[in-house]
Length: 222
Image 1 (cartoon, rainbow, N blue to C red):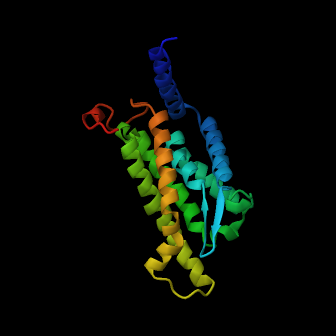
Image 2 (image 1 turned 90 degrees about the vertical axis):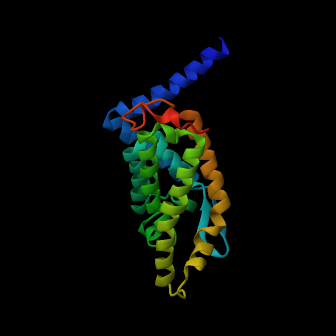
């Protein structure tokens, strides 16, 4: 089979999945959300503790960022609701095979809540704008979702946790050192990897009701 034919099948396959995902019934979408919650729980076990902070390095962000792309805003966000809700209810699939409500009131609870909003945000822009499916645009959006949404909520809860355990008040720079700075390189790496996946698997044509379906090619990005 000619290379051009294989390439066309690849392009057709991308469109077929995303068009099906957009139009399929609620039951299938919920099932996909549950699968993605499980994937998030699995990569959460890529878990490295650091001696100077209660926040570990984990692989969750990669799955969270892809959840919105692969499932769309509502069900990408729902996948992280499942992940957070079932984990809070006692399913031990948070980092380090932990679970229970205590994780939410601990140092990392804010990051987990941030996963929900980050997946929703990424899903919204992916479904709404063809242009965002480029590597450059998606990387920028993923870095925003990671460092503003996830880390913003994460630092807020981290500060509450430190106060609750009697830690001296932490200024913003101290919070950044505890909850963001150690993770910058790893989070950028995960965002780059996720953006490359998006570049490879998303169709560069409209499959739903994209706002720029007729105009996105005027401003192409790699």
